[in-house]
Length: 69
Image (cartoon, rainbow, N blue to C red; front, side, top):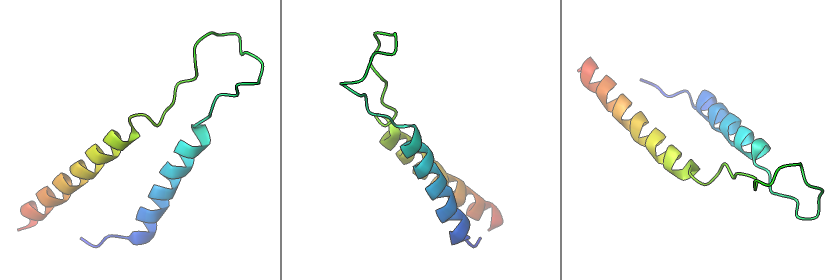
């Protein structure tokens, strides 16, 4: 199985842009939004999700190689 690097890099860039565009730091000097809840960071568990995704990719590729052999 050949890896198409252009599609791989494009996928990584899309994930990076979506995470960066939705991550917002709170504005300490800005007016309140009506709620008392602090903003929730989305990057607190991203590293664990990335590790699971890489492990799943290796598992899937190894399984597909074993099925071909």
